[in-house]
Image (cartoon, rainbow, N blue to C red; front, side):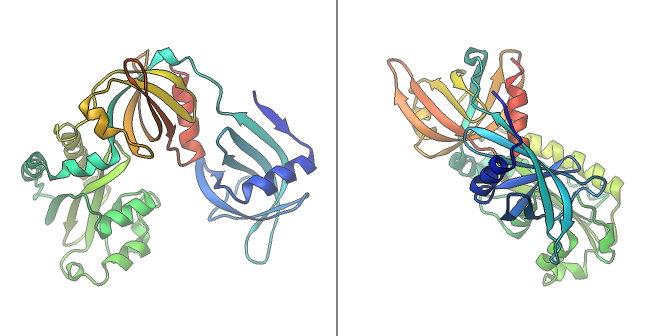
Length: 340
């Protein structure tokens, strides 16, 4: 059951005890961005945020505990000398995320451990796939498909920002849009490289296993400049290669259709036969990636941490905590669980 708190003392107590020690996000133009709560008083809260909505003074801050999501509504009443926002608390909506969902409408399948993803990359089929990749030399002066279990500098850069790289022209930093790795961070990575003497533009699109685990990238450079049409064409080529990687058959997933016995927006418990592969996939504290499939056929890729492995008369009962990194991911799972 959801609960709304409007009493200033109760709001202050919640913010002071939870928001200062737990990751907090603020909704800005439909995006959840991390913010820092610097100070909390009964009548005001001071936060540091990289950006804010300029068309409204309303500020929505969200914090997630194990059992609940706290959605706080504030009014920005000022800015301190360091540029931090001073907010007046109005209310907090406490949403219960442990409400049970009818479990027999879901199954878990295509399960793989995080470690096995990287072990699979040494398979010869990956090497052959890279050799067969279209070279698109008619558009680019340099092209490569890079797949490796170890992150290099480009993979780390794209992973840290969770964005691809698109540099239309190294001489015009202002052409780099916000949906790509920032120019300054890119330039700090590449300024000592001699390739800047030869290439002036670059596109680099990450290859992620089910959009979670970075395993490589598709990369192109040009001696002069590239435009948005070049990027869109290259993205189609990269998407085809990424699809081929996923369907290459190198990733040894458990294809068992595992019935879900308990599920909510935080945890899942399912049954898996005691197979050889199960003994390798499931370990206490281990990270797994799997498909959660509803009775209606809807499918969602999810990550989770294994918290319990208990033998039953016939199967293993596997209990996991979902790995959800933002309120947006939590709300996405909540919406999916309604698609029964």
